[in-house]
Amino acid sequence: MMKEEDLYKPVKEAFEKKHPKISLEITAKKIPDNIKSILDDDALAIINKEGSRPDLMGWANDISSKKIVIVEIKINPPTLTDIYQVKRYAEVFSARYTFLVSVKKISEEHQRFLSKKPHILSYSAGYHNISLLSYSVEENELYSDEKHPSHYLYNHVKKEIS
Image 1 (cartoon, helix red, strand yellow):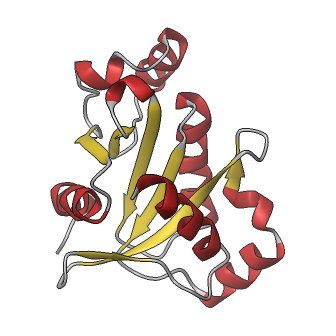
Image 2: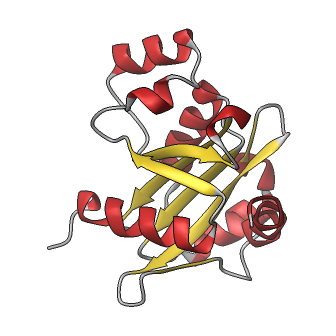
C-alpha cells in the first residue's frame, strides 16, 4: 500500500520538471538549512514547537527572491481539513505559492462547496491562493482540474513560475 512519503520524491521531480523556476526540498521530517535561511525566526520557532512541517518547501526563481513555495501531498481526495492544514503552513511561512497535491481528485461535494466559497482557498488577506492539483503516479505528472475553481488560479500562478 502506498504511503504519502512514497510520493515526496516523485512529486518533487514532477513539479521541478513542469516548473523549472521552482526548486523544492523534502521537508516533512526536517527543514534543511538552505530553506531555513529564507524563513523568519518566529515561523521556524512555532513550527519546531508544534512539530509539523509541509511535505515539500522551496522557492521560485532563485533563493534570494524569498518567494516561498509550499507543497502538501495527500493520497486520498483533499478534504477541508487538508486545505486548512496547507493554509496554515502558507500563513506561517508567508508563502508566495501554495499547492495541495492529491493522487485522488477532490470529491464532487467538495468541488461544489469550494466553488460557492472560493475564499477558503485564499490566504494572506486574500492576496494569495492555494492551488489544488492532482498527481498521476503512472504518468508522474501534475494536473489541474479544469472544472475546479482553483484551475483559474493555478493558470495565473503558472504564468509567474514558468
